[in-house]
Image 1: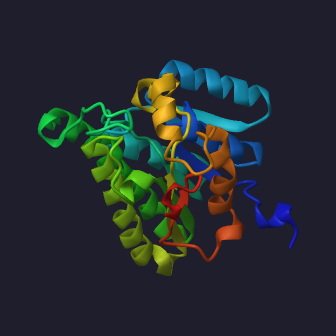
Image 2: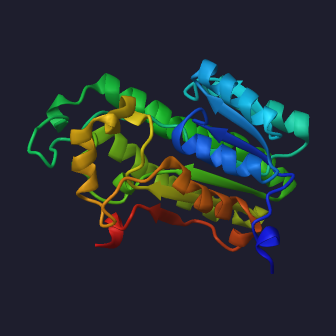
Length: 267
């Protein structure tokens, strides 16, 4: 089978959260560039609208949905409105997430983010955005996908959800670990409906999460040291995996967690 058939997403109706920058933008770009109709959701309205205008001028079929994914009512409304407009929903990337700050220790020996220093306000907000909003996204998408007996849900977890990671905060690792079992549970339920549910577990990528913490050379060096490939990934390097999971190439893949981490989880 030729690659253009195996990885064909032309005509798909897709929804991507956290799409105004970083991994979410890369996911939306690769789908749109290959013929999918993509609704891009983000809380950053100005950036999102500018991106949508630019992508439309290049011929992509994209729409903007400015929303805080923590607003469950509005999130469901946007997904339902998409289905009403297009008549179906093929692929969802539940990608939006926030940082909870640095972990309890860094490679340089500085200490912050200890368990007794983590506020319940931070804990609650990170759970709301990183876990509850993903559940709501999956729940709203699943209702439509079960009815049409097809679909793909791809969740952005993290390698910090697969192992102890001292460089990131407690709420972040807790939510990313919870997403992995949420994906496995949903994959088992939705398999009879031909709805595939998988997780991507990124390692260290240049994104805006954590206020762009990786723009700091010292932070870059700390994270680079843990990566066997010796570098931090560009957000665009997620595109191949994203396209694979959205395309017929992954028709027999569900309930998986796929690391993309430069070898961090290899040992």
